Amino acid sequence: MSNLIPAIKVKSLSFYYGTAKAIEKVSLDIYKNYVTAIIGPSGCGKSTFIKTLNRISELEGKVTVEGSIEFLGQNIYDARVNINRLRREIGMVFQKPNPFPMSIYENVAYGVRIANRSSKAELDEVVEFALKGAALWDEVKDKLDKSALGLSGGQQQRLCIARALAVKPKVLLMDEPCSALDPIATMKVEELIHSLRQELTIVIVTHNMQQATRVSDFTAFFSTDETRIGQMVEFGATEQIFSNPLDERTRDYVSGRFG
Image (tube, rainbow, N blue to C red):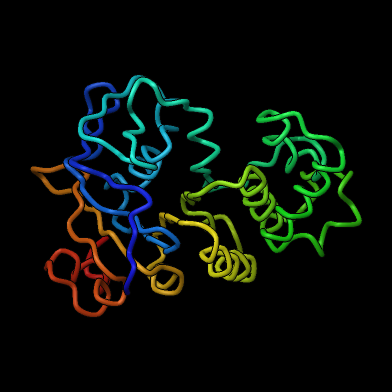
């Protein structure tokens, strides 16, 4: 892989919820227009790590951050950072679909309305753009005024992706986005990830090893042992991580010996 340009640079990141350490001294580059998978056993800090990348972890209580995360040349934990703008530029899709109890149209338009004053024609354009980007337009274009809660689980998840795409982020974080979906809906989301990588940088947390190999270009393996919490054991091209890992702990995990 040539022309690797970091979209996000994580340097010696340690993260605490209160006094409890969740991540210890993680350093890695997340490359622009590639998909990076975060894998590892339960409790290893995968979801915590991805939430540090747009500071959404701060919504969960008192946190302490050591080290830095650079995005567009600035440490996102700098006091001068506009958090709302950061979260528009680094969007997030969660484990369970969480559409707002409003129409399909208003779900997608919501973030754009907050960010700027757009005309109805501009909103119409954005909604169509985002729903097409999430491969949902053809399924919902004739019922945009219907409640989003009436969609299937897989459609709701793609709607949440459309909602994130509407504000035109540079990075999309996905925290186990398929764990609540059936195989067909999962396949559609994975196809969507493949198409979105042309426009976006994507980071996906997944517990599904096959999914990581299918959708990602790079993989980071996180683990926890008796002495260290939330450490990144190994990072590299996905093919190398799964076929020829350098660390024995990675080899044991990807081969199914533990976790």
